[in-house]
Structures are given as structure tokens and as C-alpha cells.
Length: 252
Image 1 (cartoon, helix red, strand yellow):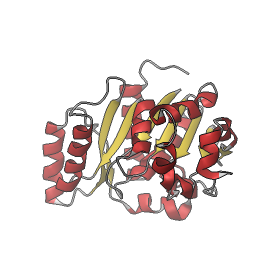
Image 2 (image 1 turned 90 degrees about the vertical axis):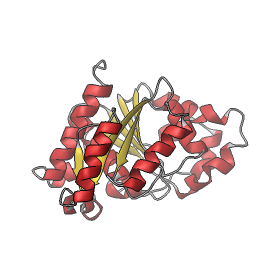
Image 3 (image 1 turned 90 degrees about the horizontal axis):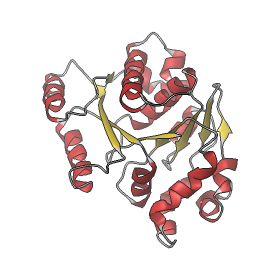
């Protein structure tokens, strides 16, 4: 099972929209796909019309790894399942710092699911925390949405600093432009600058568009309710690049 995590230190950058869209597109391509909503706000769970609640909450996951398998819910889309968020996730650091080897606990939780799915997408909370460190350990790649602004570039540099300027050998960084408004000269200039400075930057540019915002209203991926839109095409391009970069040697 390949593990992708959508992550950014900063919130409001299109992280959940990317997780939902890529998981949907992966399922459409025939991958047995699981999306784990690890953001306590539960936006991905809301988008798929699933109540953000894990029975027993976070403490049940701490005490019984099979609980995670029982928490899996089917979505309305074939081949795509979801582990819903739970508001108790906000206490992850406080609860798991008391356990032995907290840095490998997430890996232990995922073991029962490894043979059931081809791909796992994790929608992360916007932070650098013990939970984030756990995710960095289990993920094969981080999908990092960046708004083409100075502040967004700074958060990427902060992430690299956390990794001491280079991610662990097993972890691939896949940054891409999100909420891009090509009408703004400053954003166009920043795209040109960041594309040159960040060699791993993907070419896909998810636009700042109404259809992306409507995902919360339609409660479905944009590629499902507006497949001909520019936003949907941007996510398709992003998914194509992710497959080339991270799944080239992975077959169904």
C-alpha cells in the first residue's frame, strides 16, 4: 500500500480539496483507495457525507489497532472508502506522548489495512506536531499545496528546516500550486520564481475557482459534479503527475 499525505503547516491552502480529488481520481483509475481524514475539523468526511466520528474516539485507536479497520466507511463512489475524522484527534499529541515509541504508533494502526488497499491518502491537520511526525514516518510522499505568495513559500521553507533542509530518504516531497489566480501579477511572478527555486515543484496549478469551493456545497469531488471545468482538469493533471512521480513502479 502506497501512502500519500496532503500536508501544509498553513491552513486554508486547498489541502483537503486535493486529498478528496486525488482519492476520487485514484479510485476512478481502479486503485483500491482509502482516504483517512486526520484533520479534527473533518472537512473531507463532510465532503463525502460521512459523520465525523470514530466509535470510542482517539483512545480506542490507542488501545486497539483493529479499531481502525472497523472505522472504515464506504463512500458513494466505487473503490473509495473513508476513515472519518474525530474531534478527539485534536488530543493526539497529549495522548500518544504517553505511549512507548509514539513515532511508530501510526504504522502499527495501518498494518491491518495494508493488504486491503492499493493507496492510502491522509488528509493532515495544518501543523508540525507529533501526529505530523508520525505521518512523515509512514508516508511515501507528501503532497504539499502552495499558494503562490511569500507567506506560502515561507511555510515550505519551514517544512524543509524541520527536515534539516532535506526530507528522509523514504519520503518524497511533491509540492504544487494551489488557489492560483493568474489575473494577479504578483502570483504570476511568484509562480515563475518558485518554479525555478523548488526543483521538485509539479506543473499542475489548481486555480482559485468557484467549483473548488462548491465541493463543500455539493459534498462531492469537483471531478464528479463538474468534470469539464478547469478545476477538474487541474486535478486530473495533478493526478497524472503524481502517478508518474510516485507510482511509476507500482502496478495494480
